[in-house]
Image (cartoon, rainbow, N blue to C red):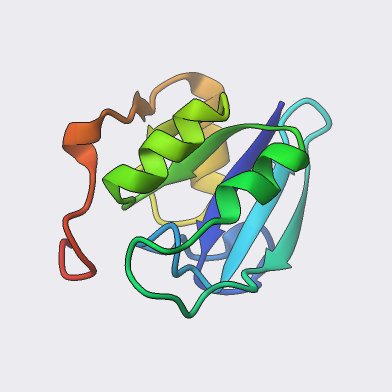
Length: 122
């Protein structure tokens, strides 16, 4: 299964997770079956709130899930419409921790009530 994780840095498996999905500087694209990942740059990092559209790109990659700390309602709706499940990882801080918790099934699936109301929500 392909999973996306928003990151603050390119630090390998110890990369810190970003608090915001759309404005994360990087994303990890992880293949949980193969146990591998690639870190890519967020080319649309600077955008007006609510105008980020990486969801289409992730769908083209065959991504099935997103693990995040914070995400807006519009992004949740768009991802869900594309068949990408969103999971909240508010108690983890690194890529490795997020993927481990996801594999263990301990992350909560996101609902619209989890959505950020702006960049000051954390």
